[in-house]
Image (tube, rainbow, N blue to C red; front, top):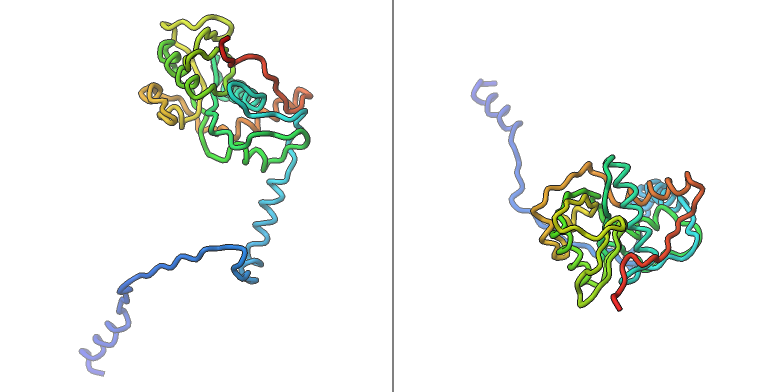
Length: 242
């Protein structure tokens, strides 16, 4: 074979084919779409594994907990979880902990067994539990924002709402000092200015990648280690001024 012809042949073996165009088509998956038995068989082990995990009972709710404004038992349970676990996971004295009211995605936690899946229903977002050192006057601004919203879940702090402002604020039972610096636990979403919390956005955050949802799981473990069930009461942390 002539050398020129051989080189031509070898070169043809290395021809690189590239697509001239790419087309996409969306398929909407509904109950009416015929089931693909092959795909079902492929996915079944993963589905079984997820269902086993989500159906795992991790605790028992002693009574039905409600999400309400200005205060609810589910609010307080959530805030207590952040307050307790922030102290433990960061190893510092946290003055107050907050939960974005809209971040609690169910209105009621029914009495009885609580599954892992139910906690994902309560807190489906991967928000981080972070700390911030906040001066008292900035904390007052943030509390005024929560008051304007109708009252957010809080632990370590009490306040009343009057004309959509936070009044009679006490941190750890002591009146709020506008010149003092407080350590608060919050979600990274709120700390980054979410829900109009712009006053918190410039303040540095301390984070260790700990999820708020994991704080709920861990708090339930703490309660179980103390022989307690999942529970919380309304104790006038947030109330409307008379």
